[in-house]
Length: 444
Image 1 (cartoon, rainbow, N blue to C red):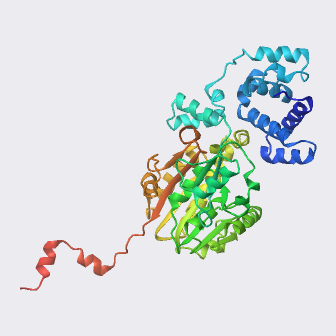
Image 2: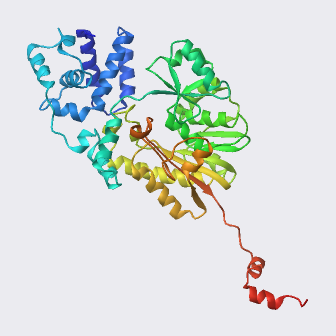
Image 3: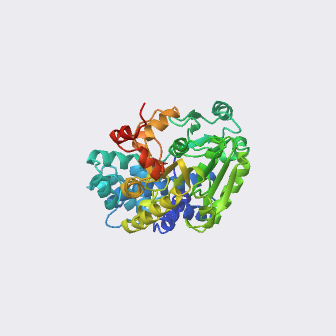
């Protein structure tokens, strides 16, 4: 389909706003769209798809457009080399010199490093390779993040069955297939506006990546329990936990952001849940948290992280994170985990999770915590998922990535608190060697 000059100019203008990558790309683009009231739905879709294509393949496109990777040249290269448009579809937009250059691009393959081919920063590639990823594995992982993510839904089991939601969506022309792992998920073909569908407004489903849904299955909250979502955000996982608890018990949704908790309110109202209690906290030392110490059955810690597992959705994150910012996050992650763990009663379960692929945010945090907390043991994620009838085995710790699982990159480890039974003096006497015990026994 040919692109008009107005559409192309809109793409270039949007790129100029987004490419500094000093703010989230979706936020910048949303603000830009609000100022472009004349753009129709087709125009907006073209702009968004092209902008995100540039962000996903920026290393490749920058190499193609050297020595002058301007927003306009990046847009042309993206349309020709990534989105596969031919020159006839750009007729009337490019100058003769630009058309000649665009034609030459068709047969051009720039020399790239392994990290550039994977479209990952050098420091990210290095950390993954240090953790044991081969060159081929690194490249496959990076390439799997260069495509857009599918649209996944989670059916609210308080209000509907997955099969019924799929049938209703199909009647309305929306192809919804069961997700391969989560028993609550549906994967939508294309990107229809599901947030306008009656089933959405009635609270029958929420938009939630399948990988995110597996975190709730690892926590496996039960009816009547006391549960805490320690970093609830806008509450996607909170609502899933509440439904798994059949709206019974007590579920606290903690977060330090009043705005994020405000975004939870309309979702909570749609959900029909009555067991969710949003709580604004000032930090992990908040008195609201201290009052629950030793009383909670299950805790989910979806820790603040780099988000590098979500590059299909948020490709700009790789330009907005750095080794320094991740090191700061590591301090926060360790502190949050330590404070959240204090909430658990004996036998209580904690799931620590991130949407990151970096070992420094995942294994390193868990290994350090276990070394410092002998009253915690790790439970095998693969066994726990099997108990939930999820056919997935990534080992003791959950490790998801788009390459192997078709969902965002997630990490999770499951911990259980086991407080040793105290030993009293009289117990020590009973534990003396058998020979002494026989000597002290009364004669038969």
